[in-house]
Image (tube, rainbow, N blue to C red; front, side, top):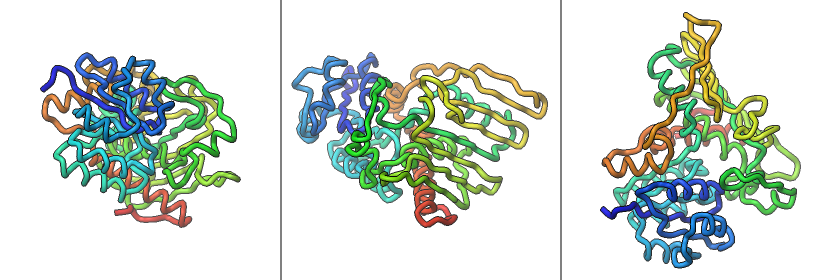
Length: 357
């Protein structure tokens, strides 16, 4: 193996490309060997911020992959284009990390799985909330039986909207015209808060539930005048142990990484012998148990390398020959995609539906 892992960033539709490239730039054993997007201006911030030389900047992904031969490709395409881009990249023989969500549909997710299976390389789906210490702590406490058997997952996730920030959470000030131009607000490209955020809740929820499958899904979305996608959705999943709720919102009063809005973004988890609340970007987990029903706070365990961010974790797995697990695995993410597809179907047909297979 080369002294450094060679990593390329392909397609800059999603602003998280800059965040992921920063993690590569800061990793001592990784190198950004190439970046590619059809629109050069979308790469300019990353090119300048990470000092990427001109010869490593491409507008043709094929030239980028042929010349740089990366070990790992980061894909940040629009949700509706995930399958197409995964199939384009897979034949070049690199592992592929796709920024959330998994796909625009279960059929697309399965196309992605098949494309990487043909190469023997790993397909990784990155969910940034997996790297929030309070959520990782919540998972550990659930597995240790702190609140008994998990019965209910309640999730509220979102932000002011995808046009209010870019990489590094740099604040933007969008206009109505920006919405009209953005893929985030186009149904054909997988726009909408349901596809953007429901995957977070149900994928991490499936992780908390250790793969338990819901038996029925009921969902509703808002219908804002002039928009073809939703900005607000509520999904109820019926499990054999009870009801769980997953709510997505573009239009929270504040962004949770700056000031937690109300309702607070994150998870409330109910078990047979207690409850947990784990909110985004907070440093504590609040716990109730049958022994201490008044509740108490526990400091969230700090995330320690290489288990503290997706690049370190994925490269650790590749170095040790292990498959990625948890929400980043195709198994857990596929179950999440099944729930997302079921919610979209329920909202579209205005009825409860069985889990889409």
